[in-house]
Image (cartoon, rainbow, N blue to C red; front, side):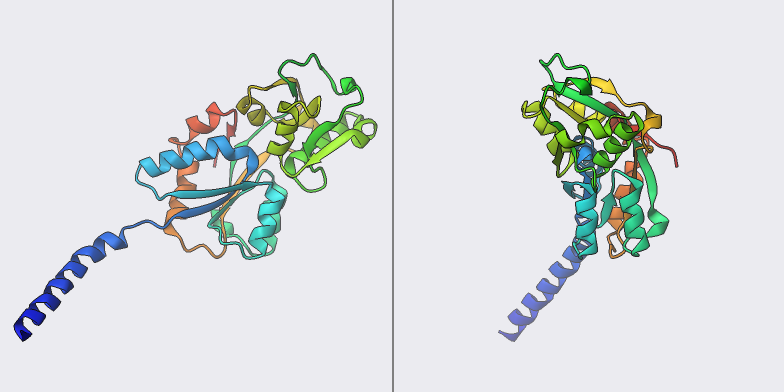
Length: 251
């Protein structure tokens, strides 16, 4: 009987030894907090990363402002991708990112959209309706939009008509559902929804450059997160972002 017990114990040890290398190679999921405007492109990039042997990505999309505040409050994220420099600067100033990993990934354009069937062609054709845009006090797309309208000298005439949204994708929904006749979103958002059309493009010199910085969070110890960040800036991911209308930035 003792020999049987010893044999079983030895067999179990062999099984554990055989399993441990496999278990050690199991990549930890990468948790990414990303600007809402990245939804389509980053979902596709994450899937490609996984198909090529990378870890599974769990991506939470929202306004950059909301995500930065969640990270500040201790939310467990491995990576943050903002739609502007300000919120990444905010986390860096509070020592909440790994500064050495920070890089500018993408650029975008700001556009005016209307429902696809609409004949609206300018802000002056609001016709008593609302102008959808992300919250101009905190959300990057809204801040860009306000800056552009101020530069063009029309902010004071439309500010009372602004329908502020919690993110740029919510602003897009306001227009695509015909809840507002016009909205300000990114070009990539407009391209993602066939129910809207672009009726104007804001000149780049009317607002700060639209830049998407990415960085690992200060608390992340996930090696797969570093590999994902490298992948997002690689030649393999570039066509995905360009297909969605983003400008891929250099190192």
